Length: 69
Image 1 (tube, rainbow, N blue to C red):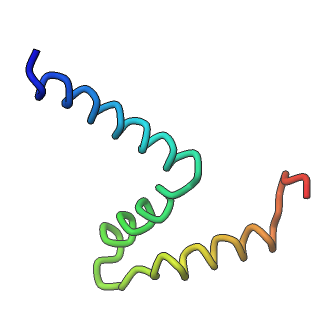
Image 2: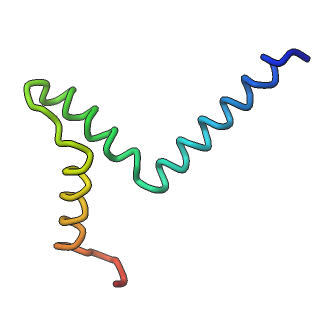
């Protein structure tokens, strides 16, 4: 078995795991936001990641919804 035959499935598994973890932790939210902004509002500069998360957490604090605490 060649090294390529082994590393390709490992790379796919690693990418799948990274995708899953990013989805669980919410890290993919910023990437989705940027993709939306570029597709829907190409003339507008997207917020920085820092500003995006500040606004996200401010919205959560203002309207906690079903959170317990």
